[in-house]
Image (tube, rainbow over all chains, first blue to last red; front, top):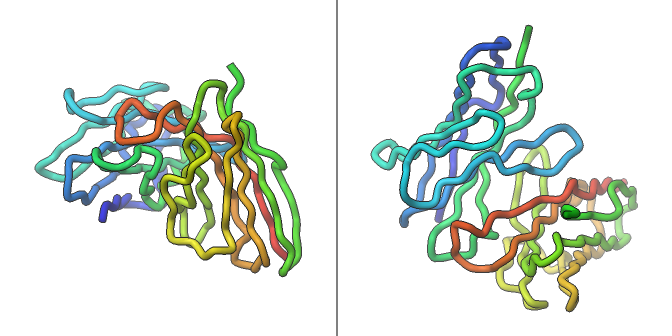
Length: 115
Length: 116
């Protein structure tokens, strides 16, 4: 069974500081990995995805993530936080052999950005 | 291009009642998936429909059911509501079903159900 673990349910950074949200996955087959963001009272918006190929994936709003198979990690980063980045972030995994519609999500990390 | 539309956005029911939630996918998307989001259990997969057929089902009791129509619109139904069914129900659509990395889910804003 696949799973993802997000370390830290709450992360607080200052505006302009580096954002690092951690995600580790467990999968018996090469995974597809995703990061989604959820703003209050809204659905999930895709930030970026990793399928195959380049291990450094660039997404929207200046976010990027690096797939590290040796560490089974897919951490999300952004060089400089903005107030508008305050939201909840979810890492998710699906396997290559199954339907990409069946995602297994992490428990989420709420990002707070302070002045 | 219109996004995924879910109705109603908010609703309140009492225990024992049943509820039907609706989801209109993005035009041209044939796959619709449903997820339940609660503070305690997080985001959990309910089921997926493609071309009016249920392709995948999560670990939920039979009180949770769904269907998809020929125009790809989907409904989910929860019968005999329990307090624990209070949640945000999210619908997502995608162009295809199956293991393709290009098959990205686009989520609606959700239907927030409160069971009293």
